[in-house]
Length: 514
Ligand code: AHR
Image (tube, rainbow, N blue to C red; front, top):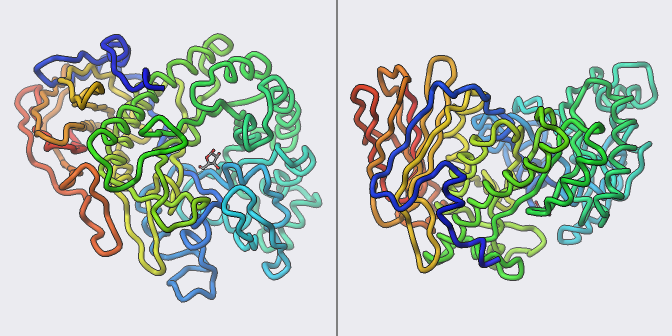
């Protein structure tokens, strides 16, 4: 694991970086701009885990917390503002224990179940298929359903599909109508199992590939052309999983997932705290996050062998920093704070996803509210937006824009034996506008970055936004909600085709040009 913490010049070169350079610069190659950045890279994930669904999104219609038919109003507004393209549900590990029929029909008749993976809480199923799919419609997100392969059956999955998307006069669609929903919902993605190598069934890739073929066949029969079937992908760098599943089942899926979590220490036994960490854990967190580039490169190479045309999307449908839980909270609830470090991990990860836009077609950060690297934290009737939320919003101009390849030259930021590039960045164009995003990972000094706009015909800067903080471990709290908050940014100079940007220490900046 230690080896992965060290940056080598070779690795950086594969990322289009030149390091040890004294100047910090980014060159945009407008002539090479052809690949669209799938908006679904900005996707989210909501699991029945801790206080994500209950408390975080759903309080029920009788709650004192202001709500719209049971959904928290404050969270709904914040989610709408974020323009979430796609939302994955109901898990996670929970998905392979979930039996969807428990979550439809009159709420008072829904059974209680034990959430065996997450804290052993009793789940009352008041948030089920209707509540999830209606939420997607309310916030304008596409639905990504994770079907139960680990402890379910083909029949159970097929009936769920029929319930959700069929318009025929068939038993499940009629049951949906009886339960108050006439028209089918528009489900865009169906995951065939989750982490089938672990909590989703402890399977080998050979065994899982056979199940994928079987489940996928019936998923297609009953949901013909209605959704993409997503094969369950690998655990981090387990490229063998990808290789076997692609070899045996590439004709049986439309996309394949992969999960990668950033563990700052590199040790699942003791992850970094989310707050109060030192500079070594700061740079280790960023460095471990940057491994996403190598991870995608390796899985994409395995996929290329069986799918050179890149028809099968790679979906990083769980990612983000995973820290120790906040002291005093239930360990199984995975509730962690969110700092400026996490904001930089989000920004630098998006820069990586953009570079791989030809293969990466979706990503779902874990998770949307109150769990892991969350966008939103709640406490009673209070809600705050995290530094990560702000990065998602600042980067929203890149959704469905055309990626402009960039070459970066960066000085090094080093702590002990760990070094990473100081500058990260990306660019894209849509509707005659160009979005340039830049990050400075160094918490000690501002840096000047020269952006060469090449053949781009840029006349003006429409808008600049910066996210920075008083410290790399700064967080927003329920008492001080705006310690890490976006502000207007003007520290740039545009002359001819060069943009000179002075980035504050530890900062993310987005500039919209025209
Ligand atoms: O996001 C938390 C958990 O992490 C998910 O339930 C599981 O898929 C992964 O191991």
